[in-house]
Length: 266
Image (tube, helix red, strand yellow):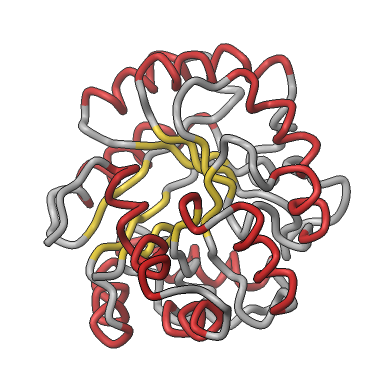
């Protein structure tokens, strides 16, 4: 059993345009799917993935409802769990979070670069408090981003300050912060936050990955890929190269995610 905690797919009518635009903005990254859910399903079969968490992002306030309606549709299909999103500048963000909960969606994705907010900005406190009240999971894009320059909006210091406003699970994507290995080790490892392992393969030194694994413990790590930008099999190669027991691999591959998502797995 393997659960991929970080993937992306788009409605078929906009998938090609969305992937092309994102690839160009990120310096010409080569997508590993065409952005559709059907192509993601094919890649999951090739790479041995049983369940994919599909993350939506509301890049402007007007997108909220469409993003969350799509997440609800994704949840009707076997092998997928859709996360919704709200935009920090949407006047109805708190009401939309309540609708997300009513739709049975288990979490929200917030992307501080695409949504232009610092994670520790005071304006986010009501949103985080509402998320906590509803018991939703929050997954942040963390660290650097290929499509943006400095200043980055979710560095370890920022996230550390934001955590005090949460009473529900927080996941920091990309090993706690893309491009932030030493800061993650020094400031976030051991804190009450989960790390997903998306986009680590060939982007971070093996020794850094090992130190994060050892210091944060396998109990707080979630296998992830960041499809369509990386493949699950690539991230498996990184994990399999590390000094980690078979029991701890099972935690990372699916047991931690199943516990966090409150789903039963065989």
